[in-house]
Image 1 (cartoon, rainbow, N blue to C red):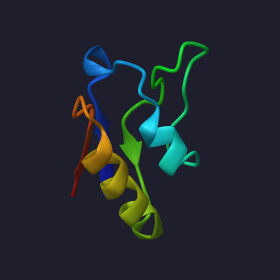
Image 2: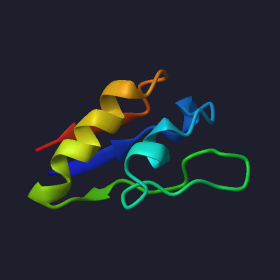
Image 3: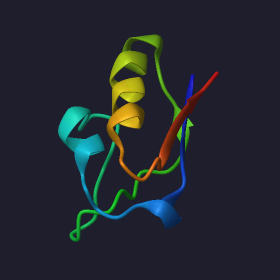
Image 4: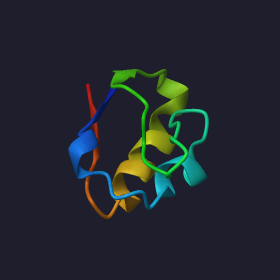
Length: 63
């Protein structure tokens, strides 16, 4: 599995980091700064939930 992020869409809602702080890091203004990366099968449910609740659809989970 892989998390893909479109940083240009991020509006700083920070829902991703609230749900999965182990997967998503924010800058001082609340924008996601985590780069796209591979995740473990154990992290998949949290990544999928974060993608679902992101109002700007910044996150996609592939694989």
